[in-house]
Amino acid sequence: MSIELINVSHVLDGKTLIEDINLKIESGSLNVLLGLKKGNAGKTTLLRIISGLEAPSQGRIIVDGADVTKTRVQMRNVSLVHQKFINYPHLTIRENISSPLVALGMKKNEIKEKVEAMATQLHIENCLERYPDEISGGQQQRTALARALVKEAKIVLLDEPLVNLDYKLREELRFELRELLKSRNAIAIYATTDPNEALALGGTSILMHEGKIIQQGPAASVYRKPTDIIAAKLFNDPEINIFNGHINKNEIILGKELHFPLNSSLQTLSPGEYVFGIRPRHLSLVPFNDNDFELSTTIELAEISGSDTFLHVSSQYFKLLIHLAGVHKYRIDTAIKVYFPVHKLFVFGHNGKTLMVPSTAVT
Image (cartoon, rainbow, N blue to C red; front, side, top):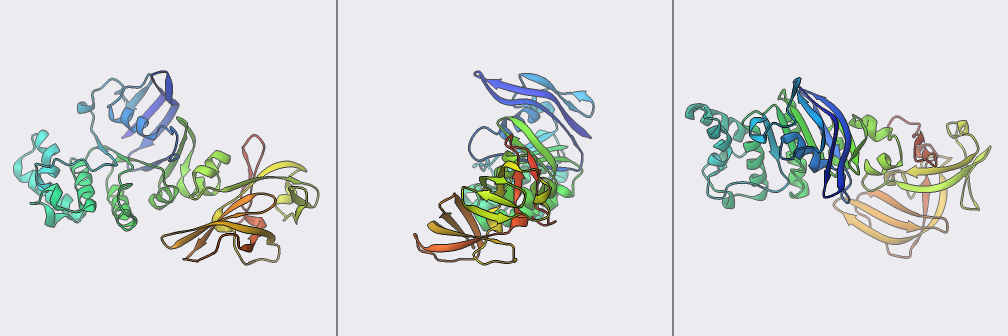
């Protein structure tokens, strides 16, 4: 089975939500749509068009060679999971999960077997006789997932299904969901704004920005080799640090006085103006290599999030965000040294296209 989108665009009230999307996805694949938290990436619109909830303004949707562009949602073998828990409050968990099978006219004994198997896979088998308001938020989302997956649709669409859960529940359910989707010979398309979630899920990453697909490929490959600055920013949380600079024969110059030597990879670039990037987690407060460049900075803000610490620092040349593993306490206005590993730099042209990615395999 396959699904193909051919020149699909959608305009609503004069605003282009998605533009000229061409995409082909095969059975058994996990595909992650990744877009920015703010702005119109187009992820939800694309899922709604694939499901049949909306019709594209132009273009075609082909499923197994058949044009389904004008086929009603009820006639498509599609399951859609939303970010908000959508369960029927007056039905038990068992009745919620079984509702799509009842609508299909399936026999009672077969429904019972499928519902209990799915509930067991999602660890809610002990909740089947309860009502939605009698179970936790995590169990409610598991119920919504079970109802969507139990009818074994050939296309499973998930629109940020874990976004409303706490961190621990997201981690747990993400792993279970990934394994469950892998076990089916279906097409799974999962929309998220979280780059870490895209990496954890794996499969194929499809980066969307302002209604267009800007890059797609295996998750690790897209992460390591973004095609341009937008892709590099999009596939990093917190966002990659970006700053301008100049390369001459022997060194990089940032600002008027900030000089540091080129490594062997950077020496292959022609002298001139460039845009540089470095991931926040690649900056450190201690040097790890002899050629790490030292920069004097001042802490503007220190944030602790879970088991990580984020430092916002400034220098006379530019501001940086540093991602430190672990919980660390720092005072505002404290002077600290920050170290750049030169081999971890991304280099972009002024058209935004990637010219060079970090030389090591793990970035």
